[in-house]
Image 1: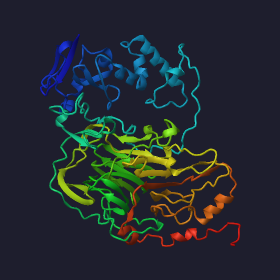
Image 2 (image 1 turned 60 degrees about the vertical axis):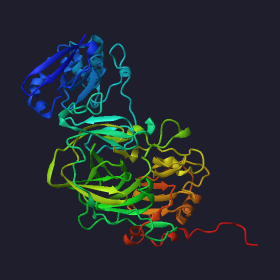
Image 3 (image 1 turned 90 degrees about the vertical axis):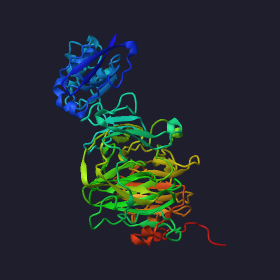
Image 4 (image 1 turned 90 degrees about the horizontal axis):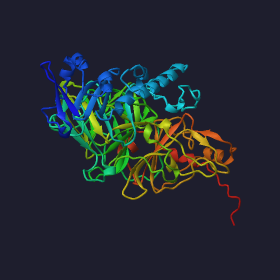
Length: 603
């Protein structure tokens, strides 16, 4: 059996070189990856090349854009932007693509075996009988059809989560912490096959690794991605101090400690032009970014998009919670839209820019120690809470943009901001692969676990993400939500219980009214209940919870509150306690109406 290497050069020549199977290792001279110019100028010629030694499915349905020994990268002739990777000895990937997306074409093909044609015809017949045809990207299950080419059962009616809507137009990969790969469809074959650092990358790209953990951490915890970009990140001028965000700080000693229960009214939106990088304000925190231990809680408030600039954090990860206004976030890995009631995580070192449609506000949890992960489920089992499949990762999309006036890179380093300039956009990553990526999550998709018998269960059952500390079972920070749900406990005080906690609890409200304090705690505001400071329902909530009829009832409809909980004792900044002028001095009064109900008189 012989293999084929196909090369295309700028002299309009197409060369096919055969080699024996025993010596199919290729050299740089034998493989000529297509560059953008070649692909553009000779696209028509490439489409009509007949690969006589390739399997029939590749000859008929695909255009081979790159071949390295047995390995093939081929473009579907019926999907202009779809590149499939596989090899010449096993064409399952190529065949599966046509079974799922183009069964009508596959059914009419004379070159595909009869069994594949028969199954494709069955699926096509079933598809055409549907009253409202399902999108062709969905695979029709084989078990819907029987061996006689008849439909065994009608399409089942089902109930879906109607609160979930995909409103943005960007494409995403799905999964949490998975090994992903993506390349911009404008440059097929940009990802190297079988290695990370070829001698020469396709399209003249540079290979650059972004490491989120040390090289030698256990493999299950190792985080890194390879980026293939037009220019390497190192092409910038020296950093200088950036003074555009004066209220971003890690100085936890500005004021004397304050153990009181604290509540903030909604934080102000800006009156003048402010972008995301200049609209960061630190409310509280603990630890040190130099020692890689601790956290900080910020709010952002902005009304204009970042122009010819990008931000990255050398100190840790940002978990961003929009409260007002959707964000379009451009990253080196691609684009994301993050609307209120969604979150995103931009991990350490990843460059991004934020575009807004108008006045926008939200919360940020920054962690210095580790990266966020999904909480362990323990006896809950394999499913529930935030399911890994619901996390979305952007897909590669590059911009090749020259900025002679200067493209600004803003870096948060050891708690301070610095900036440098370069003459081009940093969002020039054409392809990437790895498990260290930004990601987003829709809070509507959280699967709530709760008691169906008695007692108010601890709020840890509402944990979406956690950043663990070195102490087992204790978090540097947990991200916890209190979403709409049913409350059905019997003979139980259903609202949150009164509590003194060895953890610090910072709460925010995205929308609606929080069940334990329906008055005073407003969307866009916050509360902080510090370590061992008592807190719990106000007097009105206690009366309702103690005397209400315990029927099954909905809780927190049209509401989304959340908590940043930490094992560290957090200090409030000067801006958070004084300069923002949003601290509610009357917060303590919500508990003063609680009555003594003890029935026995004093002796």
